[in-house]
Length: 264
Image (cartoon, rainbow, N blue to C red; front, side):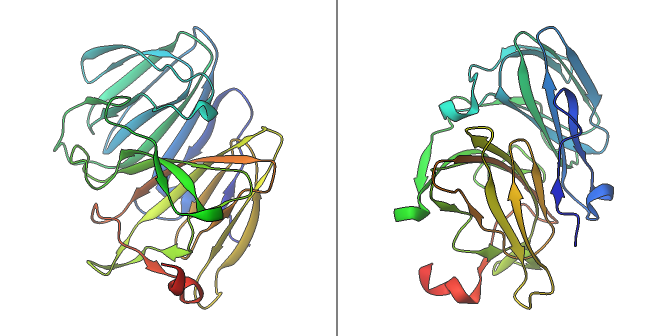
């Protein structure tokens, strides 16, 4: 069985550290910190650009030689308000000090110094409905293709109501054949409400050479190296996930699975 499901190291500190090397791919990195009031974290970006996403809580940030002040207003991710985020380019650094208990996602992909550090959101991020019926979900686009302040990263939040499907109709973005399809690796950082609930994520290729179905729990991450990757939220459990995508070009083009093409 491929090691696509990443469970957190624990409940405190740096609880995820997914690198291209550990994931067996080339572009996407993802870290997650769960920190307490007064605790700190700091990193150099090296060859990667970074978007720090305040999932929950508040923290004071410095990055790229600038004091960005206190970021964060969302104390529970399921408030569904827009997040506070900070973009930091490669060959730079960042540091934070939590002013409340906080959960901070570190989204990483190759950078080439084409952009400056900047705040992202909450202004300019609007919760948007996508889909219909039990395929309805709600999107906070943080840095998708329309935003030009990243070199590689594509980042978005998705809220899926209980009993609904998401990342559906099933689709893949695992070939470099623009504009038909683009190659994008992807991570899903999952949260559940209530937190003791579960969701389901399937990752499969058309030929079923890869065909994995996983129960996902609060704070777990699913890596999608290729194939289709729909999610389901059972009745009674609301699902959130943070998507990080990157590949050789910063465009999101996908192809539907044959069995669901008629739903597109």
